[in-house]
Image 1: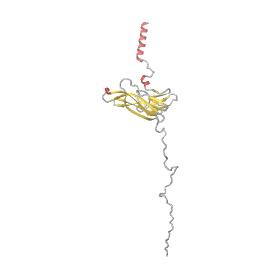
Image 2: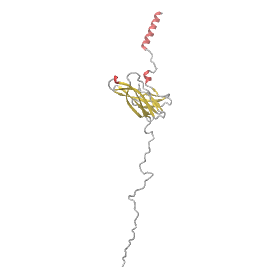
Image 3: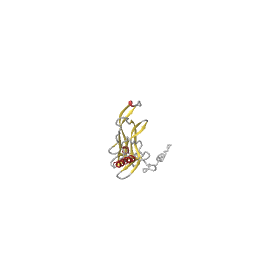
Image 4: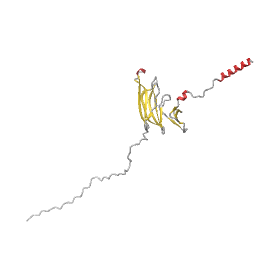
Length: 213
C-alpha cells in the first residue's frame, strides 16, 4: 500500500513539472506604461505604424492620431476640450531634445510647435511636467526641465528650466480682418472726364473811336 501511494505521488509531481506554472492574465507594467489617461473618460494608447488611438470610454469612439515627436516613455500630455498639448522629444545625436506641441483633435493638425535647445537630463529625475492651458483655452504653457550642454561632455551640462508658450488656435479659426471684395464696389467713384471744362467766355463788343472833324 505504501509503495502504491509513493508511486502515485511521484506521478503527480512529474505531471506538474511537464505542464509548468499557469500563465498570469494580469497586464504587465510595460503594457500599463504605454496607456496615457487624459481625463476620466479619454485615454491614449499606441496603435499601428507609429499612430495613437484616442479612446473615449463614455461614447466608445476611437480616433487615430499622428502625434509627431510624442515619446512613449517621457512625454506628458494635457487635454482641453478638443485640443491636446504635450511635451515633445526628438533625437539629437545620442540625446533627446525637449519641445512642446499643440494639436487640434477635430482636424487632426498641429496648431503650434516649438523645439528648444534643452536636452532631457541623463541622470536624476527625468519626469516631465504636463502642459497647462490658459483659462480661455487659447494658449498653452509648457514648463520644461532639462540640461543645456556646451559640447564638452557631461561636465559641460547645467540644469535649466524654461517655459514655452504656444497658441492653441488654428489660424483659420481666428477672425481675420475684413478684405475688400474684388470687382465692382458698392460705392463707385465718380468717373473722371479729363480736364475740367471752363465756362465759355463771351467776347466783349469793341468800342470804335470816332474822329472828330
